[in-house]
Image (cartoon, rainbow over all chains, first blue to last red; front, side, top):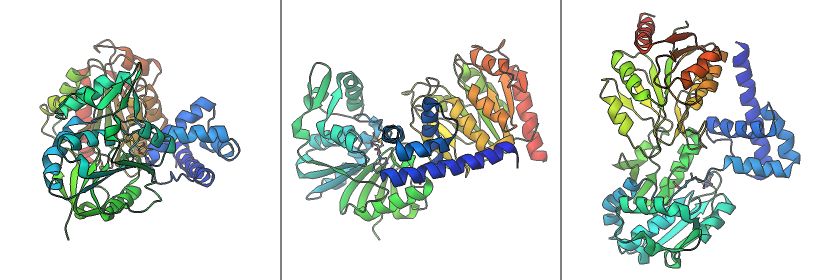
Length: 279
Length: 192
Ligand SMILES: C[S@@+](CC[C@H](N)C(=O)[O-])C[C@H]1O[C@@H](n2cnc3c(N)ncnc32)[C@H](O)[C@@H]1O
């Protein structure tokens, strides 16, 4: 074995120990997150702190609350927008709504909802299709600060232009300005959209099923997990869906590589919409 | 040169026309080839559709956790970093831009080096920033091979020049020579 290969093995060991320490000190379990992501985020912290080894983080995790906080925020990536991937929302309306229209009520779970843009996009779409009043939306995340932001639904006004363009591309039927109240430098989502949304804490690694869902949206979350954790969470989703319920993933995510393919039928390959099989 | 087990290519400003040349020169590809071309976040699959025309080899944007296969060209999608995990599968990453770019060349090159060790052939083409420099350092650390496009020929010389001036390039070649070299290396892979 070359020296570099040995170094690499030692580095991996250090990362493992860092994640153990994090788990013990914070209750956040990152052990089954994609290792290459984790290393990238830790590298970032090492560079800022001027450390050369991952293991130097361990005493800091144990004794330095400030650094622990920073590390946890490094590991949390919350990028989102309204109507992200507009073509997905178009497809949702075309391929999924005609089914749920026939149900007496609709339960939808947004797992990893971040600051709320995705669930408000869904709310708008449901409203325009006349489905909102019979829908109950559950929006969950494992980051309490971001959940707070999601509930407040106040977004920088600079983003509105992008959101409006996305809304139009997604096939929005009204004017996007119907859905927010513009302030000086921020825009807040109208309260009428919040009525049927319940925000709550849920950790996909440790918490259980959210039953009897008709649609589960989990977009750009699985991408942070390794194969094993993806498979576990996809099973959780399968168990949380009614037979024939829909699962929507992010544009670069798939059920294909985690051994759960046979639990779902493909509704849209491009837009990553799947349907739980009726056994 | 060690017989490569993967080819990784990084290109930025001016990259499309050289990528077209490289891709159309390859007939058989017994190992995976992965490309990062800097692109704007909302360019959709336009670059993929453009480049695909120049090859009959399967050519896609990778999906998260997809395994790397031989006889396949992969192009990093807009707005995602592409990394390689130890089990030789792709990991797509929405982390911050690096060197002002997402996808960034460094992430692909560095993780390819850690996984494929001395079996990496990295090619750095025309471009206006220094993305790829750290990636090439990592490739050399693991005794892989680095080819830089001749900065004099490159439409924008900054990117290959950075790699050459740090002494990281095993070969500094014009694009036609790069195509010839790739094909002779690939022939070597086939002949064992
Ligand atoms: C990139 S955002 C995706 C937001 C939105 N779904 C979208 O696609 O725009 C990822 C979110 O997943 C959350 N997340 C990561 N790991 C989680 C876990 N184990 N349980 C619940 N949420 C998690 C993060 O806190 C973050 O808000």
